[in-house]
Image 1 (cartoon, rainbow, N blue to C red):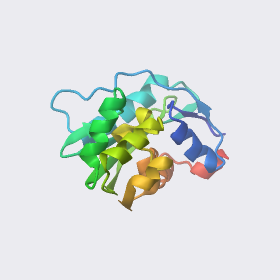
Image 2: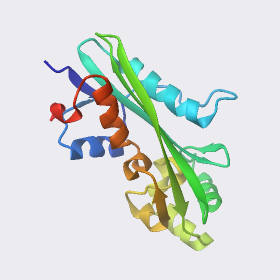
Image 3: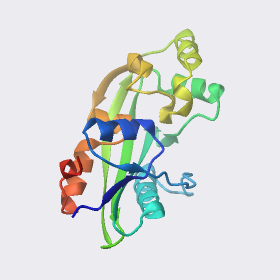
Image 4: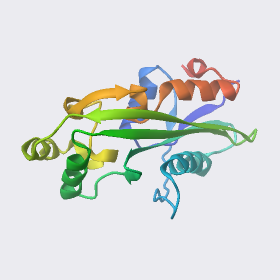
Length: 193
């Protein structure tokens, strides 16, 4: 018998990606401080946070899927903007440049003690942006709750010139990695349909 699948996320994008596969799951967001630790590199941060999110909501008889995604430019994590001005600053910084998107993904099955985790890496090249274009995009409200201040699956797609790597990673849940981790745990993701 399959365990209940729990998605430990409040992200509508992760929910939509998983639901788009026809997978049945329950949402249970983890309430964690997502601040990077002093001296912690971005790769370590996304893996740690994905694992901590999974562990925070895990209960016996359930398989928990958690993820954490960060946008990284020049070694700096560009998280969600604090306000519209912060979004403007981030967009001006990434305009016309290439940045990295990292996603840590973790699975945890508390009853068995089994765990699997991994990281996906994509690169995104942004279009040049005038101050007017940045102002227009910020005024849509879309960038205000997105890491790096843009949504590749929304209006922000107009600002993206090229993606190197997996698109679903840039959205927030790398599906090929997720599928592989399910198999490492002895499950087929599509069994949860």
